[in-house]
Length: 335
Image (cartoon, rainbow, N blue to C red; front, side, top):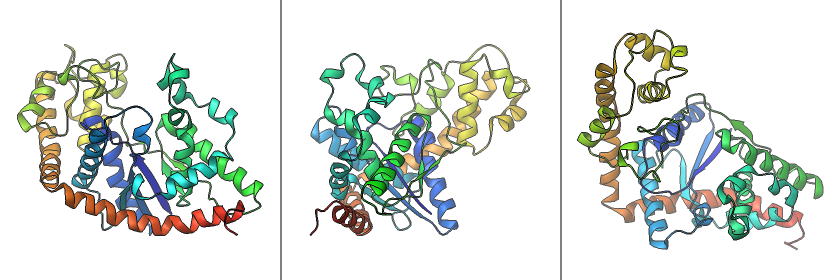
């Protein structure tokens, strides 16, 4: 079993990034390796180019993302951790797969339509084509499983289609068709000011999100001021159906506590947010504070973080090179 997953270096990571992705990586590292499998995690800096970003910012974000995932529990000695750019086989295989993927397949990708909006003609080719690079990211390592959220399932199906067409067209059994790994534990974290929108760094209000670099007092203050409602917590999770802010806070508590919303409700049923929010604030500080402190210590020596990425990339290149060579031979490029 080989699990491959990537995350874009967005910078200014927040609680939603941690609970929705990074925390899941740590859990998978432990679970998969207990089963004798392998985990590869990469910082998707090439995907970060699909929309304009200042070069210095992209470089800094890549190091900061690496420091964050290490601080959260990814062990570079146990998992292969790298950034895409240091493994050029990602780009090389993506070009080969561009000649296997069909335009009609890419035209059906809903994320391009969402991200490009009304300015599709002005969007970069990279934004249109990045699902093929995503396919290369996982097919390069013959990943057996890929963690996906609802918004990425379509891209994994594309990767499977590309793998099947390549194997058929070139009469080889080269690429594994990866299976989706959907984590029931991965929560969708919403804004602390408006639970109708996801927690995001693009929200102009700092009170809408908890940043992983926030100090303890700031974290606690944001949760105490988080939008809620006047009613006490219900007896069952079903009672949260029409209470989005309450549901969001219960979801966050459960994710931080490695619990479930049902258990949280059982513990706090009938209590108001005057009691619940301070308890949530204390839990968040206890959980996020040590991660922040480790991350800041790592960022005191960015060269060491870069060295860890380089060491991981060396391992990744050793795995990737035979697959790329086999694809090149199948296509008549290595004679």
